[in-house]
Length: 351
Image (cartoon, rainbow, N blue to C red; front, side, top):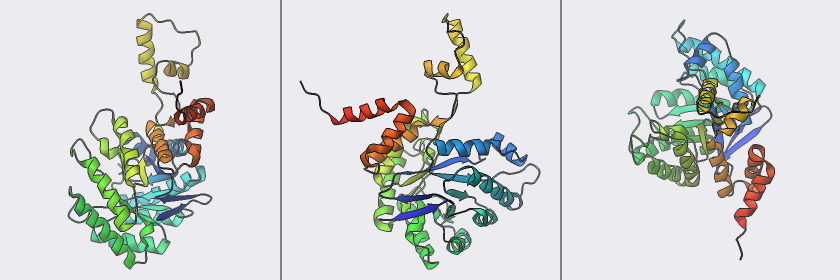
């Protein structure tokens, strides 16, 4: 069976067809996060520190690190991104023990990251574009690390799944020319938004099966792409991830967190409750309040997507005896409730 081995200084994570689904935490990425981008330009890494620790605590087994900030003071990422990537990687691997994924479109940033990352990181990414393959694949061979292969090339991103498969095959074959084995290629077949393409879900499931059966490679994706632009994105993601795992997908770059309820929303809800004439007990803390009214939590906690993935691991027999499912629910709901729920699922009613 195909196994892609990632390592930190102290921990090994294996991506594979018979392994638990690998969750690659996506939050250390300033793209679309103006506040984080501004912090990084100012040398403030507090959000990075918080996100690194929280993602691992909530179930991420690998962390993606992206330093793609366009500085106001210097818009040239070839100059600014390599030192920033180095700083973030050194910081994060000092905080958590999981393997890292070095994520950049800037060649110098990839190499800078590879020089300082301990263990065997994943590199994100190589495409089927000739210039990109010519730079990235020798780097992968030099450092003997696995790489994410994205199924687009010099012609762009095709809506035809057969074309995207052909691009993946080209990358795998070209990698072999550099001595890079197929088990060190993790293909991203490119998940299209289902709101824009009704067949996007069916396409990716078919592609993943082909990539597994014909190329023997592990796969990944940007999981939230599937729900882009639609309401209740978590509901769609929660269905997509187990279905993708059942089709053979072995990892995803995703957010493992349910974010804390903002103070502004708590204040708004308290005003609403007060206006309705509901009298709350004196001294009720915010965590009790948001729990009582079904708002979530004031703390970081695993998102519903993590629940869906852990359930899929058990259903696909990649969680022996449901041990992780029980542990996960024990931590979040109490051990008795989780274990009892599992026993109840196995027994039939009599009478």
